[in-house]
Length: 125
Image 1: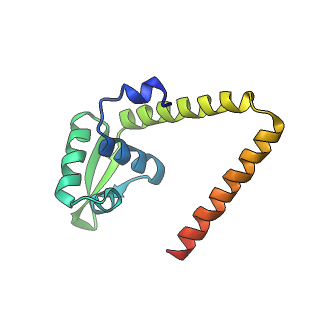
Image 2: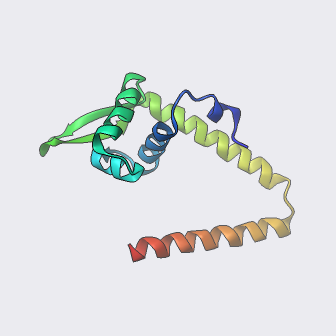
């Protein structure tokens, strides 16, 4: 179950994905955002427009190529996603506190296997 704070966000699923993308990967070109979401550039622009209106994201032109638009989280956007990320970490920590050592070790093995699979997939790309 998601923490209530995540459920109370007045953002669409694509907007949340954009905020997470910018939080995890840093500033990104609009074309990368569109590609990551699997939508057209105009559709991604519409999603970002609404995030700009809410002071969650800001855009700037690349100084080397004015046609390129780069999106960043605003300070407000960073605080919002940072707070939500911390809530998720705190919740996970509370779950770990009640797990037995045996289950914690099993969870660690699974997480390590997922990390290895992720690295292998990135290397293959």
